Figure 1 (cartoon, rainbow, N blue to C red):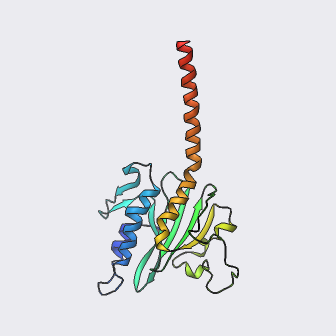
Figure 2: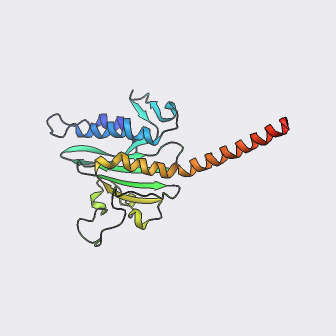
Figure 3: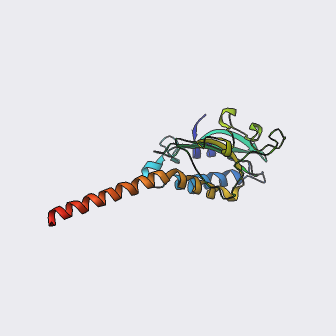
Length: 205
């Protein structure tokens, strides 16, 4: 299953009688309109957004639904985020209690999480409340649930996170992911400055 996010949401409109009926759309708006554009910074509008001719809905390249689950009788999506041009893949869901997130990256993500979440497993991983037990990743295939960041190769890991930390988590992750590119660009810029300086000296020497 891989379906455009807005198309999926429109097909799963919650019943008006449900207390948590607005919760699904709140998640969709948060991810589609705020979080995902931040992951795609540096890209042009048309590189990220497109108009689905079949449905008439606005969608985002690389932002789809790869599974579903329910909480409080509301159907909810498992978001799949694959920002164009970046070697990153995120799957995540929210059940009105917390976010479960799985990360896959084409490079190591060396990050100081500054106490944002627990990057190491609990002392007793057999405890029934183990946060990364696959049963808590509702809507996920078991193959999408990975180990803790602290025991991973820093390219593939899963985590549990409270909603108020979501954008901070992705800010720290993207800063680490783009750090190598930034360093490379800075080095290339410095090399060009030296070349330009030498060329100027030759002309004015």
